[in-house]
Image 1: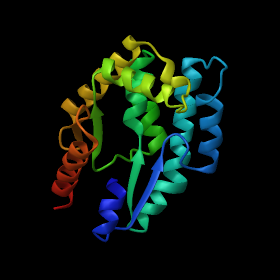
Image 2: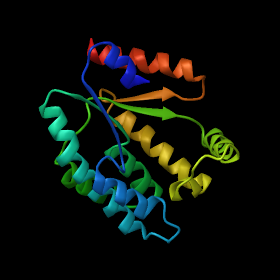
Image 3: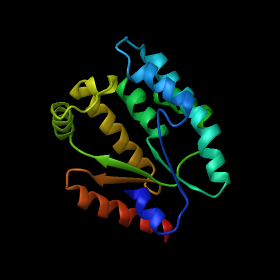
Image 4: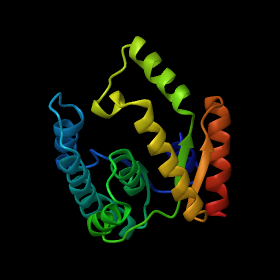
Length: 188
């Protein structure tokens, strides 16, 4: 929705996601998200980082150099939250790996769609009953998701100029309006 709104304003937008924003990333996504095999936490951290390095070098940097606006569904903060807080890796270790993988590239704006763990789990169950697809990360414990959520909120506290917390408990239209207001502030 955001990409469509920005395109309507005349911006040149590219949308992407992590993992899976490049051909290699799609293969990595399948290898570590859609597998039934146990993935060692350290391997998970390094695989997400490998995907990100490829994504930055072959998709994000070239798009930015062309003057395009990039909207990515997840980026480095996801690794800090999921692999750092969720898997328990030391923050400094994760920061070092992320800096190496991204070359230090940070977004101008990060939106975190905040929702209680209980409500998020209810939505996952609803998606299951509607035949939606799940991946390995959708089967974690409530404690894991709570650690991830708290990590995102800590990042928001540390970086309030870049990071915005969006209340995701409301309707889709309410969320869309809040996102539009935040993005309008950034764009002036």
